[in-house]
Length: 336
Length: 267
Image (cartoon, rainbow over all chains, first blue to last red; front, side):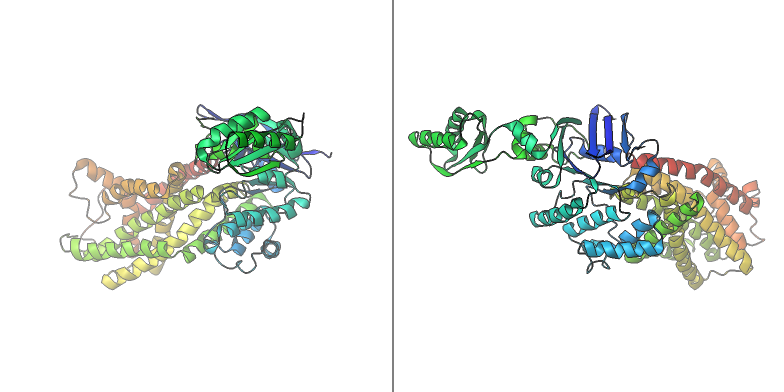
């Protein structure tokens, strides 16, 4: 592997009693994409704000391309591109004016800024909308423009803070395609996300954070391997029979069964000692004996959702609901 | 590029951005000019009928006061806009760029001088319609306008500090009204100060709002020997006294604003 482009050691940031960052360590090798995965309030945004020079940490050290973010922020800013969670584009300017302005503020010069703005509008399929004010843009278009803004100065390192949060599924898929092309180009990227699928699709390696600390890291496959073997699932026809189904699955599988009340889906992972199909047949036989009707059955590879659940004791999506709009605070009371 | 050239160029870029916003969202300009027109009409026709100023037509006396009050209100726009940019994350974007630290504030306050120039022109025309006249030399009149704008510019920097502190545009407006109303009313803006009760009279005669008003009145030629300025130094030397205040306000507010900009955005 090449050299390390982004590094953080023991970052701490306190807001009163709350430790938004509690000894966060990170390393991103040059030209790779690191997915920073965690629920709302886990410290992802705080971490990005420290690395992008917006926030001084209370303790710890961070460098980008070997330059200390606290001591020489202005040098760091020349090398990075930032695309934030809250789409920080100016809605009273046109898309073109936004990009042109950013180019000038990177000191590219007038002519180069104009040319780069047009080029990026084309690259992000915003040519037609380029001369309309951003106010008229859809959420997806704003995110694309925000991302384009981060790329104006062809940065060595790109920070993408929850690039698809709040987008509808179609725009999200669209954004993923855009990001895949981008990261294929070899830029070093730190991507934060609450979506396991997003980290799985875009990141070379994943760091799972919770309560301002790294709780696991590795490639998506390594993390999935931690969970163990495959997962068997059944969808129960009648909600009142769910507890029985959960008990049966827990019996044939490894560990407790996971229940999704809404979809009436009950799942459990199976350890490597026997094929998942055998365990599934076993489970179905016993469900049938007890007269628990099932609508659907399946065997699947574990997802990062399973990983997250096992590591943190709560599902990623669930945590989002529990925390609501907790923003940058890390106060999350109820863990399941 | 040298640091200074870079600051200037960044300041110009941000000023352009702010002026474009005024052009795209003209409501701001419309309302910041409509309210002074209302003030001119109210005072000229309602209060004017009850207030006597020896030797001067009240409408001529009034205009300098209205000008000062209006440009001060115009300056609140600086605070409200900065608070809005902070809220919308635009300041974060700017801070992640290798631009000059002071450019956002310089660009903001400079653009707001632009708003104040437009507001001033509209008010001056309204004044001319209701009977205000410039009776001094053209050069003095230009100097009066520059003094008004310079005073407003210094207040803009104070509002920048407020905007970055409170971080909500609505609160900026409400908070500054509490300060601006007494400041512009306990002064010679709308009434002669001679008959005010003791401490209020002292305040009114040392209030920079009064000295700027007095200076504008003299420079526009809207004074009369029949009504000489009060015998206190600030009122006898209104231009010098006003310039001292402007310099002091800028010297205090600019570093405070820049410091607050760095802290406010660094949450």
